[in-house]
Structures are given as structure tokens and as C-alpha cells.
Image (cartoon, rainbow, N blue to C red; front, side, top):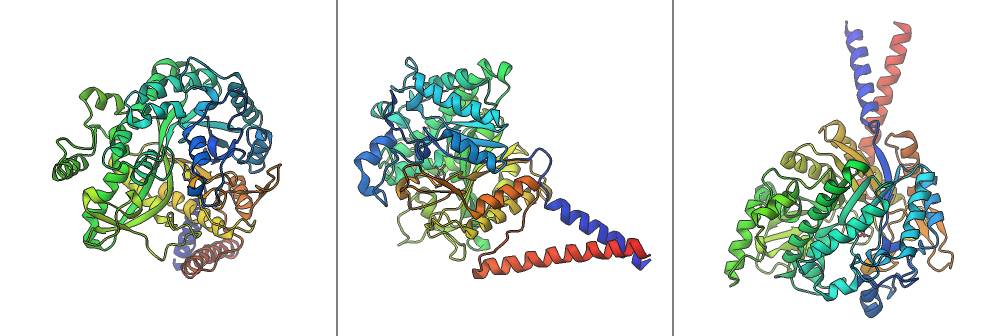
Length: 528
Ligand code: NOJ
């Protein structure tokens, strides 16, 4: 009897162990890049000037290595090499962005660049020939300078200009592109840009511009989604989402749970609630806090601009899936006098009296803005699922930056391994409908204020070589193996920082236990 029990529980355990390491059928793997970060060819043919071109040319002193992206990875010329790189990893899809100014040199849709269209046609057709699904991001921060001169994301007309640009891209490529991201990381474009004034368009205006941008991004996204829905969906059957940069917030101590929840609503809910919730509009608690704080600061109305009932309706439900860019988490407590001045999700939210803290035990590749906390990914997916339902979740970015340009990037391997493990927990234990994972990024590229010093690539890029040679790193081999087996691979070599070693030990124990049970089962089946 005892033996029967042992055998059956052994079989069960072995099956569960193996099952929990498997990605479900249909789960897709890919890698991402963005136009400004890789293309170069900033003024080739009739391409117009973007805010990124202008910023890096005028302010090299603000970039760590004083570089710009005028050549970057030279992907404008090397698109065949990029496709080959994606194919060599066995990826299912490649997420890239179209440069607004390459397609519409003036920013407006009355003039379309032939060379721009050719470039993206070549890339899309080349991917499809290799059976790689193209995913297009319409906007990855490179606004036409001309539109910036008219106010950029603080001008409500931006929503119409974006819709017109989206119309052109859907019309040109919609027959072959079936998955779209409208706008990449509004949290960074609005909160980071206007709170710090450090990135293009280099305007610091936390009081007003941040929240005008928040609202206009949501309207722009919704207009593009509705346009697709009306005009293209019936013939092209694609799916669209905005890609939100989601940060998980844990309470510093259990008594700070209310503060942590407020931080989640402010940082994630402000961009998600208007689209994904049943009632639409801003999260109530954020609307109320922003009104109180604005009053306290002497503003006659809330700095978070109200939605009209028509706008609430326009934005609510404008999604087909939920694109998640996840990199990092924070701990939260109430702000205390003397706390560092708050800079969006990095250090806190003055409006809410919150201070955000990085746990010193979370490893980072020397870039302390995005320390690694893999469990945060599972937590934020659960939070989103609980708030908005079990939507179609898709990890549109996840990646690890370090200042090491070597090929043996075991810290990055460990980062991907630990995050993929959390994705599997979300799928198998929390029953979340997560359907894909995107590594940021295919290859080292122009990392905004860090120039070429901070590397995220599965492929190393030699920026001193005119050919911009790409060489796969250990992380590229790790991802390729995982994709091939559709199973979570155990990294070959682990980084032995204290916490990782600890983590590694317990994982090895679980694996050994699984193995032991499986052997027992085989022996028992054979001899009893
Ligand atoms: C997210 C952004 O989408 C991407 O452009 C950036 O390079 C990575 N984060 C890393 O910072």
C-alpha cells in the first residue's frame, strides 16, 4: 500500500515538475529593438528630423559617452543581417518600430517617403520569408521635430496627427503585420521626460506637461485602435495594444501596503485603468489625490486633466491584448521630511506622499535604475489580472543592462532565466493567460542617455567596426536553447552573488528531488 502511494505521488510530482517547466503550446518568443536605437541613417534620403536626432546632436554633453545614433547598429543597411540574427535564435517574432520621420518626413501624412516604405517593406518581407512574425511598434519616442515645435505630446492635436500616421502604416503594412504596439512606454515618455527634462524633448515641466502627455497619449492610442477596428480589422485581423512600462511595488513593511497599492495605481493604473477597466477614466483614488494636491499647491483645477464622458468611452476597451514591459520593482513607504526629491517611479511621487526605495539586495548590472526583482513580474501580472480580468497578456520587453561588453554574460542569462521562471509561475500556478515573451534587446544599441556604454543585447555589437559586427553572447545561446526546447533551460553557469547562489541551491535541490522521484518511479514500475 505504502509503495503504491509512493509510486503514485512520485509520478504525480514528476509530471508536475516537468509540466511546470514547459511553455504552453503556442507560446511565442521574440526579441525587440526600436528605430532610433538601431537604424542610423538619420538623414538618408528624405528622412525628416526627429526629437531624438535633434537632442543627441545638440546635447552630447548629456550622453555618457557623448555619442549619438547617427549610425547606431546601421540597421538601415544591415536589415538582412538583423533578420539572420533573429533566425539564428529560432525566434517566433521580431518586434521593431517604424520611424515616423522615415515614413512621413514632415510628420504629416500628406507626404510619404518612398525610400522609407521600401525599407520597412524589405524588413517585413524578409522576416516573413523566414517565417518570423513582424510586430510593429508605431511610436518608440522619436517624435518628428516639427510636431514637437507645435507642442508635441502636450498639444491635444497630437492624437489626430498620430492617428493619421497610424493610418498610413496600417494601410502600407497591415496586410502582412498582424500584431501591433501603438505607443511604447508612456510612463517613460511622459513621467520620466517631463519630470526630469533630461531626455528629448528636454523640457522639464512636472506640474503640467507630465499629465497633459499622459492624457494625450491615451487618446492618441485609442484613436489609432478605433481606426484599425473600423477600417482594417475586418480584412487584416490584427491585434493592437499600448506597451506599458509596469513596475511592481512591494510595501517596505507590511504596514505600508496602502502606500504600495497607491503607488501601483499611480504608476501602472494611471495608464491602464482608462483602457482596461470596466468603468474607464482615471483610477478614482488617483483622481482624488491629484485634485487635493493641486488645490494645496494653489491650482484652480486638477493638474491631471479630466476626461470628458466621450473621451472615457473612446479610450475604454481600446485593446486586444495587454503588452507588458517589465524590468524592475520598488519598495514603498510614506515620504518623510528630508527624503530625496521625487523623480517619478525611481524615487517617489510627491503628489501621493510616497517614497520608493530600491532593495540593496536586488542585483543590477551597475545601472541602479533597473535592479532585478524577478518575482515582481509575477506579482504585477497577478495584480493586472485581478484588476482587469484574465486578459491576453504578452511580455513585450524584459531585459538586463550592464556595462560589460563581453560575450560571457552569465548575469544576463540568470536574469532571463529567473524572469522566465516567474512567467511559468504566472501561467501554471496563477493561471494567467500569458502568451509571449520578448527579450530586450536583439543586439546592443543606442541606450538613450547611456549611449553605447550600457549594453542589453543578446548579440554584442562592435561599434568601432564600420560593419557593426554582431556576435552572439551566452544569453543568445541560452534563449535559442529555451526556444528550441520550449522548456525552461537551467543556465549552464551561474553567477555566484550571495542571493543568486542561495537561489541556485534551492532550485538545484528541487531539480534533484524531481530526478530522484522519477528514478524511484522507473525502478518501482520495473521491479514491483
Ligand atoms: C525600455 C525601452 O523601451 C527601451 O527603449 C530601452 O532601451 C530599454 N527600456 C532599456 O532601458
